[in-house]
Amino acid sequence: MPLDRRRTSRRGERRSGSSGPPNTIIVPGTLALMLTRRQLLRRSGAASAVAVLAPQTALTAVASPRARASALLRGGTFSQGVLSGDPTPNGITLLTLLDDVAGAGSVRLEVATDRDFRRVVASRSIATSGARNHSVKARLKGLKPHERYFYRFETRDKHSPVGRFQTALPADSTQPVRFAFFSCADYTHGYYNAYELMAREDVDFVVNLGDYIYAEAYHTRKGGTGVRDDKTARTLTGYRDKYALYRSDAALRDVHARFPIVSIWDDHEVQDNYAGAAPRGGLAPDKHYSAARRKAAYKAFFEAMPFFPQGSSRIYRDLTFGKTVDLIMLDQRQYRADQPCGDATAGPACADFAAPRPFLGGTQMAWAKQRLQSSQAAWKVIGNEVMMMNTKVGPATYLSFDSWQGYHAEREELLAHIQAKGIRDVVFVTGDIHTFFAGDVRTADSTGQTVALEFVGGSITSQGLGETDLDLGGGNVLKGNDRRPATPPAVIDALRGLNPWVDQADFDHHGYGLVTATQTSFDVTLKRVPTIKKRSRAALPSLGFTYSVARGQASIKGVNGPPA
Image (cartoon, rainbow, N blue to C red; front, side, top):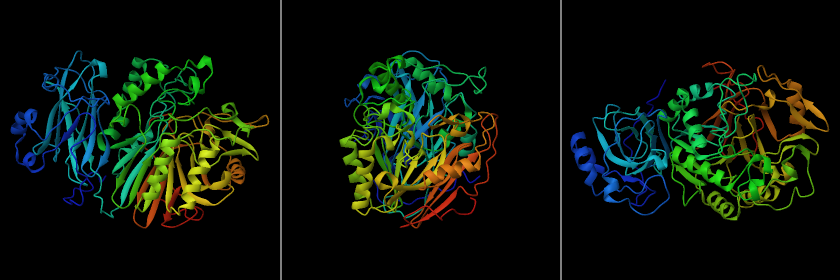
């Protein structure tokens, strides 16, 4: 396994600046490299080049000297492992959560250029407490572009596991960018075999497209569809416990320890199908949605994920990887109005189907359009929670109105902008629907011109279309099989006939997407595992699920490549 693929000394352009989110650590360059580990540990508390702000919150006030100098906590466990996120050419966010400890204190972070920590480049004690679930998070700046680093956390007498990360390419680089994308990891429904495979990939970072946890508990071992048991989260403690439970699986911890993650949420981080801008979340009273429940879920998310929001909860943002990839991450949950048609599944388009309603919302839409138009990268990659392609199960019957197709006006606005401005080489990488799809994104309710491509990465474990009964509308139901899904090829062909923009689909398997983007091509393998009902490290052949798209190519049709 080529896990240490590259360590470079390329400098390129650096993004400078001393400002940053709470808990920003600015690595003092040459001076830090000259110091021994012991000298750095002794001097780090007073180093003027290191600024640590109030951790975990969006507060702008600097932590008091007393808080910064608080004593190291004693004991504790690092049972959720270590995480890195949002890599830039000179920065990274690092995170751990300390369990089995009480009270306030600090945890020390060390970052080095070698796995044995002989060449430490940053070290700092970070204050934490039970009020933030003993989350320990910091943003580092001043690192070298496209360089491999190692990091760990420690209390007085305990060390975390060692993690590694690689910073992003410098702004002028034309080198390839490799990443995996995934979503939908219901802990109860199956084992994390896809994470097992992902941890062994040769990628620069991974992209989480939402439903990293499920507030709900849909499956049980006793009920026959679950391999593990869980319970529904409704309180801050419940949501915090979800992240701890999901990370009790070593496969997920391994992914985090090996790669930086770029994360957004979808609905299950709070509650199934909630609409953030709708009264009562757009949900029926018996769903027990509340503003307090959403606030608790958001707090737990930001404690547990390695990035800092802008303001209190803004997560849409962009990251640049040289001249090859601009990654535009969208929030399609927080600002949306209620879904049309009563959020029906497999229903006909209703009277208000095409009525304007917020999805991204005006501010985020304007930002996304500007970011797409200004991008100079070879590939404009949109991190997309829900499908942009339409999904019909009958001539006028739609699978769901929770995706872009339920927000027709904003869908057409964004696609019309891409078309009118001549923005080429736009690719949506998508989660949510628990199914592998690859196809063309077309305007005019998918009857118009192709303006982008879309790859949908299945799910890590969440129940797919072949594992459940699929309502085709009009009283027609396609029976699924949770233990041994085997959707007939004729069904896929029939649905492809209703959705001619779709090139490939798999309703029965789980996994993730794997991307290599270069200056000339965007190569995708939809990586599928044969089972999630028992532990396995096997992968299905990629024949038929590997694509190589050339720059300027308007359609996905005909670009299916050889197995990866």
